[in-house]
Image (cartoon, rainbow, N blue to C red; front, side, top):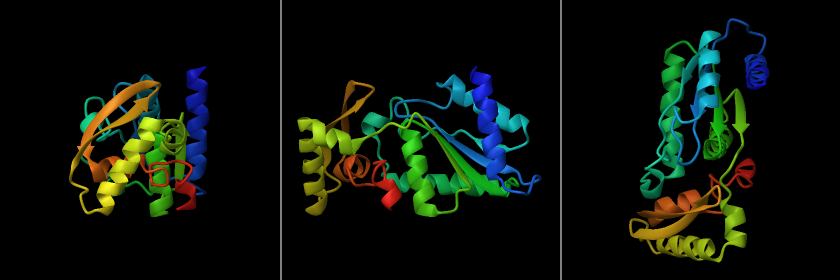
Amino acid sequence: MIRRVFAALLACLAFSAGALAQDKLGVIILHGKQGTPTGNQGLGMIASDLQAAGHKVVVPLMPWSRGSWESINVTVEEALGQLDGYANQLRSQGAGRIVVIGHSLGACVGLAYAVERGTVAGLVMLAPGHNPAGLYRSNDRMRRDIDQARSLVQQGRGNDTVHASDSNQGTNITMSVRAAVYYSWQNPKGLASMPAAPRG
């Protein structure tokens, strides 16, 4: 079953390359929050199948990986800059078009990248998850932490460290990060908030 899903995915990606059948895709595959490039067997299978089809693929370890998310020191904007670097790397290897495949938080970052840059030929969002807007509405502690981080940023104190909350698949997380970084990822209307991203 899973191979048939991947085959359909490959067909969609090939279609996104347009009429130029010889045009090789450059594919950036983004793991989820507290994940790793090798921690999701499905992502590994997608990468292998794409490489076997002749496409250029990168599956980077992102700053929201396991063990790093709780103390992440990169804003969403800076993460998008990292994706620029991977896209340029793939283009230098002969990729004609860039496609992003993201899982969970990686899907939300992929959406933000596609919207912000406008140069992505295709986007595949697998089980997108990271909903600061929903948590802001429903979780009093998150709302308080987000408001505190926003206030610090507005006061020019974005480099102050905050000990603030998040959640992943129902598991509570305490983050110890700069206020500007926390607010960048948890802003209900920010780049990492999926409902906000399509509006730019």
